[in-house]
Length: 249
Image 1 (tube, helix red, strand yellow):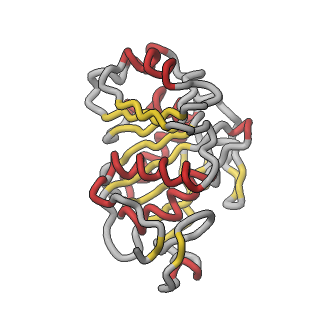
Image 2: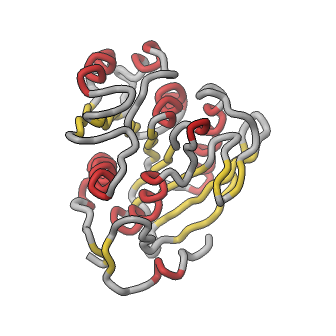
């Protein structure tokens, strides 16, 4: 695994915001799907200790510009290995390009992306990484809901779930499945706002709904970014809270 970027190794106390890159071991990786595609991604793990859990991140809609560098996912990989002792896997779904490269294949509208999720889970198993959690954002939540229960995961954190592609039956399967389900709902979401979310998730009454006052679908701005990352850490490794605003803290 390759070392982090030089700026990640600095011992200078810096403000944690924007594009800051905290210490981690980072490596470019490839995933291989059962339907014959190669996907590109990156694995980030804590620089000097074993991770306590693993975030498998699933990015927003490819046809609307979503990719592994969508900012919440990129910042999770940049910050949380250092701040919360988490491994973070991010990758481009099939057909998606980023500076890391292009994943093969064609957009599958959430269906064939199930193969992509399976390939990522298999990679985590091969690496021996602990306690996988799905962290989906927008379209990524649809993939998590539709296909997540096929795998041994601790649960899923859903950021701005649209519930456009995941059916009511697919969501209802999570009831009693023994996997924790947390949905982070922005007050001013473009697709699913808190009142409707309470109705839609009623089929899975154990779902924890986190309603974010002032939140929007894209979580733009450092305050919203920090809130979302803190909610993820609260679920996966609460002992790491609060996330510091400077590094080293």
